[in-house]
Length: 424
Image (cartoon, rainbow, N blue to C red; front, side, top):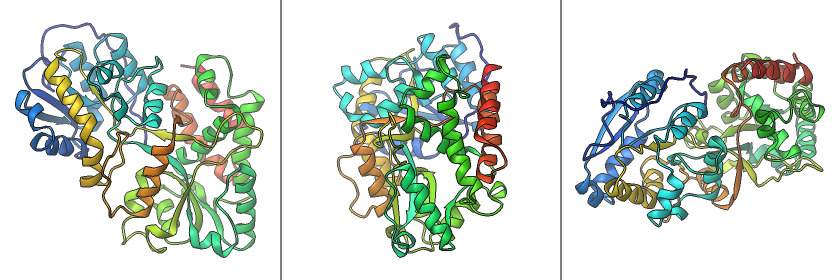
């Protein structure tokens, strides 16, 4: 959820393999973060099963480093032309762009096409990755795909005769009705700030269109322009009305989830990574997954965006090294594209950006809803800070909670973030 910053280093190739193993070796090497066991576990399952032929030709070898050292380790390996055959991608789009510009990672759009499996990446996931890296090609694979929107307590909405909101006006009206009935409309993590800033970004996309924040990144617009400030003002108005509850600035991520799953709030904006919480019987005390519905971020009346342009991120994507990429690595790529989606969903309950051919029959209703939304979506949009500088991201998330408490106006919030981005 938070991106790790990293300083740039020269990426000129030189001899050496680094700590992750060289992609030029005969095997198929994977380097991941110690904390993430899902990707390596899925690859090992594939190596022993569906990808056994690819594994026989280029045996899977795995290694890991701590997440806190991730980008620095990738920079070191890249400077030595020692990136692993496949590895978790850089934590920041800017560092990935360095690898792309230096020709050190495989253009997966072309590689997937060459293997005849380009259609195994879901359109919404493809859209998200291309938006991150900017030149219209894929440079990482979506081993995870998260969509975001409003999760809601079906029973609370039904008891108050409220339909899932389709427009922002619907959302505001629903919040007012719930508040009048003594029900807290929204649970939110105001302490960390980013769940609040997500709302600002989504409103911008719905109002001004999916390229609105790219225009800011390109210098063709500013967050302080009136039409952008309107989005922050709309979110601040929810905070000023008290719709996020008392003392939301002290509510952290876990407390926000708990508030929703114990019936203390009717709606909760969050990504689909929270499915594990929703599907946990010990945490979910509101009737299990069947009592949780999902509504996409609503449309803004008269806006240039579309409700089907779904806010999304690819969680932990993986990239492939250009150095050492050959037919054996290509066979692995093809097998991953054809089998990763089914395997990771079945074994780990993780929704990826790959096509799933045979979903498990016992998937919880919440997971089914996410899978259907992803399958139906043709386009996605990024999160508010995706294209910001590291300073802009920090200032945005530090002050995001102030919008939820009413402590900061939309205009003042946008001034702070734009100034931080201008500093570079």
